[in-house]
Length: 78
Image (cartoon, rainbow, N blue to C red; front, side, top):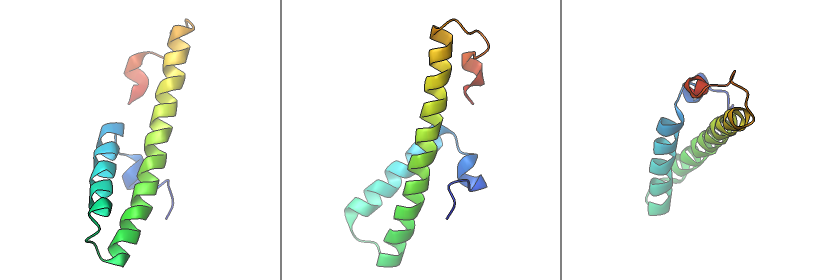
């Protein structure tokens, strides 16, 4: 799997995090078939990387705002 899957790349941070939380709950339940658990784990890893990237973008924009750079306005966070 590639972490640049268009489906995941188009998710908002909130949507990706909600899906990741659902995957974690399913995996913690331990009731899934092995193949399903592996697929969930792989998707969860992609979602985690996507969320980390979104957070890094947001952090960079906030740092630019704090530093006085008005080019990175909060409306650019989508």
